[in-house]
Image (cartoon, rainbow, N blue to C red; front, side):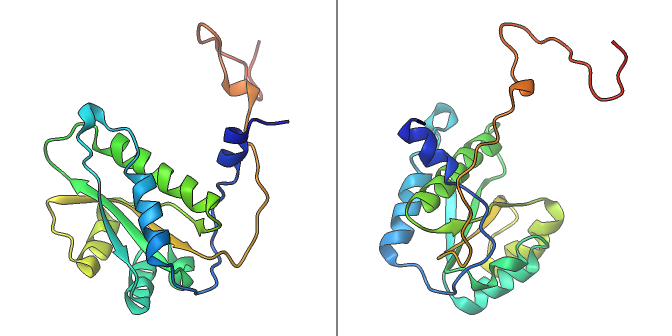
Length: 176
């Protein structure tokens, strides 16, 4: 039997089919509270969020991102961002907030997928949500009522674990 916390973590799956139902204000607030519970370097809490709830803008944002097109039927899209200057730990901090949001979504019966950003995607998405260049858009996260069900899973792989020290392991085709 798995500990409850492990079962909770294993519920998080990338959901790419949504019912089209909008999220309630309470659901949005819960997701944001979860995101803001994340640890951050020096407790800077650099995260900021744009919550896109207008169905037409959800569609535009999702179609602008090459890997978020599935999200056009999401109930909301969370845009996670922070200032480009003055935080050497921005990506770590925003990643922790994003993961908290995803875990929370899975555990309140919602589906979500983390769609990462790069400079090219910034140029497509940022103008749609009014984000100035001084901010880095870290992720676009379509969230909604799932229209697909995926079972919890583990991705544990003992070959990726080392105790005390790293030791090279022969890979496929490697000579001993």
